[in-house]
Structures are given as C-alpha cells and as structure tokens.
Amino acid sequence: MIRGNGLDGRVAIVTGATGGIGRGVALALAARGARVVVNGRNAEKGAAVVAEIEALGASAAFVAGDVREKADMEHVVAEGARLFGGIDIVVPNAGGSDEDARNPAVRGPFAGIDLEKVTQFIAAAHRGKLTVVQAAIPHMRRRGGGAVVFVTSEGGRTATPGQTAIASFSGGLVMAAKVLSKELAREKIRVNCVCVTLVRDSPSWDAAFVREGAVSDHHRRQYEKIIASSPLGVAAPPDIGNVVAFLASDDSHYLTGAVLSPTGGLTLH
Image (cartoon, rainbow, N blue to C red; front, top):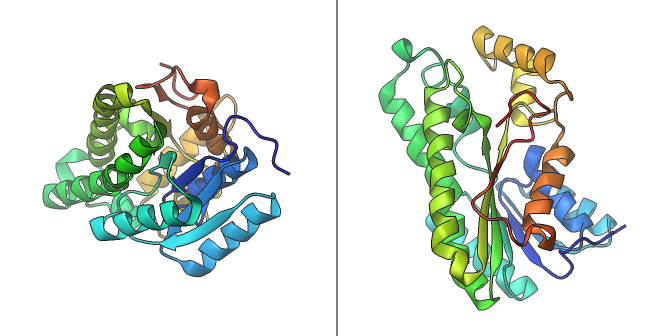
C-alpha cells in the first residue's frame, strides 16, 4: 500500500533497477507515491519489478537501456517522460560492469593491478552514472526542479586497501556531484550522494557468498570483515532504498551537495 511521503505524483528513473540495490530503491520510491521508470537490460527481471511496484498500488514501466550508451539513456529519459508526463527524480544506481569491478586486475593491491584496465573501468563507470543525469536535466528544468541521488561506493569516502579503482571512480563521482549541486541549485535541482558498502541480496553479495570463485580470497575476506565489524549489521536493499527516498523527497528539500553513508556504523564521517 502506498503510504506517501513527499513523492506523490513524482516521476523517478532508477537505473539498474531490475535487482539488488536498484530494486530496493525503486520499491521505496513507489511506496511513497512515485511513478517509477525501471531501467535495466533484462526485460524479464524488469517486468518482475514492475509487477511488484504495481502490487503496491503505484505505477511503473520497464525501459531497457545500457547506462554506458548515451543513445540508450536519452531513450530511457524520453520514454519515461512520454509515459508519465515528465521527470522529477533520477537515481543513477548502475555504473560500470560489476564483473570488471571484481576482476583481480582491477581490484587488488596497487603493485599488481593493470592500470589500463583500471582507467577503462573508471571511465565506463563515470559515464554510466553521469549520462542519464545529463539526459534528464532538460526535463527536470521543465518541471521547475528535481532531485538527483547518486548511489555509489563508500570506497570513495573511506580509503580501503586494494580499491584504487573504486576509490578513484567513487571519490571522483562524489566531487562531481558536489559540482553539479552548485551548478543546478538555482534551478531547484538538488544533487546528493549515497555511499554504500556491502549490501545483502546484491550482485556483490552473491559473487562473494553464493557464486563459487567469483571473487578473490582477499576480496571475500574484506567482506567477511565488514560483516563482523558493522555495529548495526549489513544493510539490505530496502535500507538503502529508504535513504534514497528521503533524499528524493520534500523532507530533504533544503539538502543538496550532501553525502550520506548508510553503512551501519562501519564508517563514520
């Protein structure tokens, strides 16, 4: 049942919304009254999330597209505006390839990583987060404002050994979001970041604890340390979704350029 919380009638695009954190975000926004454009590449998974949203009494549509392709993101934004009358909220959740991010040539001690692959990953991940925002800005301007909520890694705020690539990408994205928050404030478009660490029921969780051999032993040990060290426990997708929904809602209408880290007390800023 829709409970409403400052999102009634708003239109939101969530990239990578067919599973994991993106699905949690899409459901949280819908539960507060938003109409949701569910973006991803798998139509079957997208249809399942749309059905979940409709079961809440909200409206949603799946629009396929690769976040790294400008034409795809322009189509997703245009189709969302056509279906629902405009765009108010953009949540760039998907970014670069999860498989690339887990590749030992990209994630591991600096002395042994492949810097060519690292820089390729960083570029693709930045493009995946920013392209949809650039496509959506004209639509949010026409609505008199809006909210952008980036979902990225806590590695951009907290230095973690073996995460040169993630730190470079996510740290750069955090600063880019701050720049956008200044550029767009006069147009009432707010820009904030949510930085996450390990999240249950996500591709990273499955790679570490469900799929055999999907991550290195070093990578898995880091995740096991996170589980043991998080005072409030490891987040699930709805926990992240609720934070994103707050930043997208009128409850945070005076908040822009902020970076929140829902890490269960693992990191403090």
